[in-house]
Image 1 (cartoon, one colour):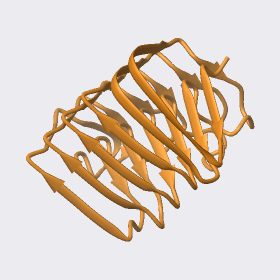
Image 2: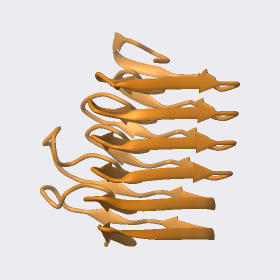
Image 3: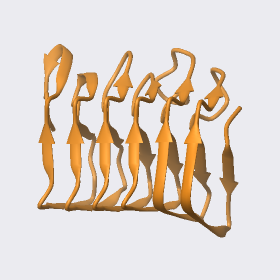
Image 4: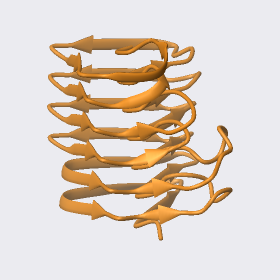
Length: 173
């Protein structure tokens, strides 16, 4: 089962916590560990999200192995998103939202049939990634980070490395 399901409006802050082994079935709205949606705001500080999965084969709903953020605000600080799996957005899948990440790691996540092994950033997103590492993720395209039409984006002092693509497209970004 999914550990946290925040369907807004509302604000949730998770501190010094581990979210592990969450699993949701196909068609469940994604987010094997955490789903944040519909005007909800989620803050993760010193949180580990690991070994979470979304089973299924639909690229539009079976996304965000670790976290799915849809129409919400997601802020990640000093956290680790690792060893998660979904069709796309193995670590984190996002659409129509705002996102920030600071001093965090996204590693060894898998998008098993599509884009964004570490991060799958869909259209309508404003995001900034600071002082973080995106490494050793796998996807067909955009193994580290896939950005499909983000409105505003920025990356500062961030390393994207050690990526593997299964179709040869966009290893890092």
